[in-house]
Amino acid sequence: MLERLVQSLETCPIVKRGDYNYFIHPITDGVPDVDPHLLREVCMAMIKVMDLEGVDRIMAAEAMGIPIGAVLSLATDIPMNIVRKREYQLPDEIAVHQATGYSKGQLFLNGVNRGDKVVIVDDVISTGGTTQALLWALDMAGAEVQDICFVIRRGSPDIGRPYKTLVSVEVNDRVHVIDRIF
Image: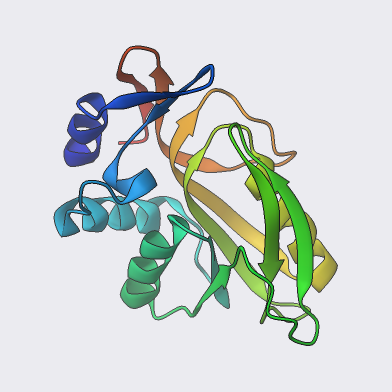
């Protein structure tokens, strides 16, 4: 399992963003296209490793958490909430600052109720900034985070709690998959 993911990562292009080697991949960028077989492989692996018992919501961060969350929602019949990068000014909206390895911005959480059991899914974790911001917002909403899963881990980010990843990578002149769950 995960052969498509590993092969596609190890052959994807790298671009420089300042001093940051950024890999361009269908799961992390939607470029050049998102192969449905790859997306299915990723989501089926996430279902196998995550604790989804009694979960009320799948939380997916904009942008590339959305396709992962959508496929998981379809496969599990668990509703998905998207943590958006723009404000809607709805009642109980929670705004939070987020910083990643190459950007900063705001995220906005809507539609989560006190006591909801949620899982967080996203494409990649490298600094943990987005996830830490989301964990704070979910705590403010009174939700219980039951599990967290990323497709790709880059580095060794600490978000203050356990999480799962399907593969771990190192990035220099190319992507090297150094560990995988299956």
